[in-house]
Image (cartoon, rainbow, N blue to C red; front, side):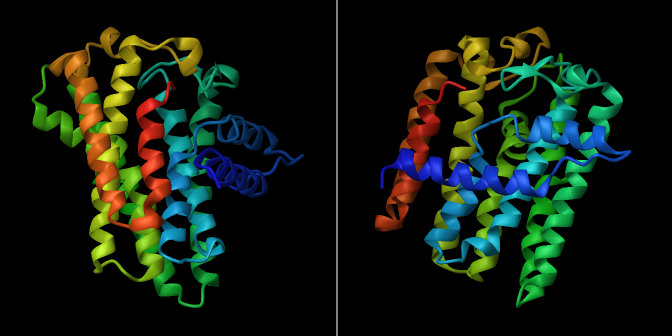
Length: 296
């Protein structure tokens, strides 16, 4: 099976499950479900849940065991985008090629839709954990997502981002911010898969963690490059926002050419980690190249 076909299959399965988990309801709360679905089902690459399904396959973990966690991580990612787009934070009006949630509905409904998706994520994960043959293992999987999406993870990175606006920040602070803001929610799927396979202490854990930490940095550098030179229509969101908000990025520190070279080097490094997995690592190798070449 080609990489493209396998990626499409993963994404289709994820979208089908998301559609079933957050359904429209004709009741007094119907507007919140509309807003949740509007943002959650707006497309997107689904990279985070794809990484979880791919790692589960590598580790011989049943897909049904991790699918709820894959969907939950995507819900958390989506809630973070809804809140990021709000006037109090990035004040963006375009996301995935259409109006952001607060523009389409209202600020109040967007805030609540984000809150609802976060809570739904933990509802989905906790239910799966309770239903597992080994509920403690399920709780460990849930715990990894909690940490990676919280104040020591994604939110911690966002806090540094907000506090750094309009200021010159060091390379070290920038890397810490990106490891939290972007890297942690990419790392969460790997940690969930490792917990599900009960192999957190095995050599393969180090390989997969090194891989995802490397593509996490590469992913952010690519985002910075696209914000600098990308086309809003292709990206599905406004470009040049980092310059407008006087944000320090990899591009503003190193320059475009250096960042493009760094991106190539990190991709090669990630491929090297994937190659240590033999044939099982082929999809992760191809994924690293796919992320390098992406245009949105």
